[in-house]
Image (cartoon, rainbow, N blue to C red; front, side, top):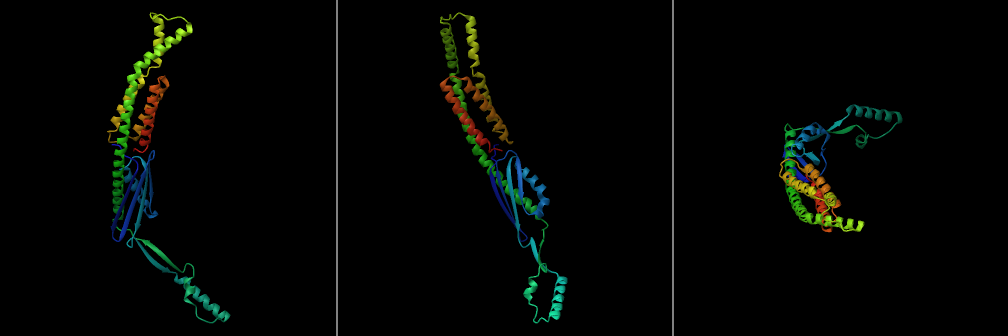
Length: 293
């Protein structure tokens, strides 16, 4: 089954005044690259999160964002350094007596003292927090997977459609092959006659042998056979349930190589045009395959 490497998933769950939101974005990549982004307090879950994501995907760049908020998760409290405050008040009294200062100490002065009053955040992790985070991630992964499967079907339909076009081009080249060989032999014979300025007898077995060898070098029968074989393999691999992106990329490289050989061997204008069209379709398939897992 062909799966795209592009997908998106968003899952939210609420429990005990806590809200967990998981957002996953997936794009194409040569390997599986998981990039988790969440509060540092949940680093202990990193291995479990990566193992969970690996159960769904084998290739692609997967960005995973986790946001956790709620009153039940973070409790704030105020702490006062009473010893520091006592020392400050005592020093102010000493200063008043020493310099004869008048008036009361304003309360606003106390609030401006650094480190006197601090606000502390105490994270309270509910008992089932880990299970809820992993369940939320799993739900988002399922959404991404569903999107990747749907887009993979569309990509595969386009690939197989273009593979059919290539197959028809190969058949057209194959149908013209015999005529090209005959024309090639005739052209070789005419050039040799012009060179030696004497008609060549058709009964000359040695000469015909040499012409046959030269014509064989320009024959594209083997390339046509391999192209048919590669197209059969492409169609066969497209039915596999496992990831097929790398397999398709390999077979397309081989097809492109055979197409280049056909183009370099052929001196026929029509075959050259068909070869260019075939290479164009191969390149378009390669672009689509770059996004298949």
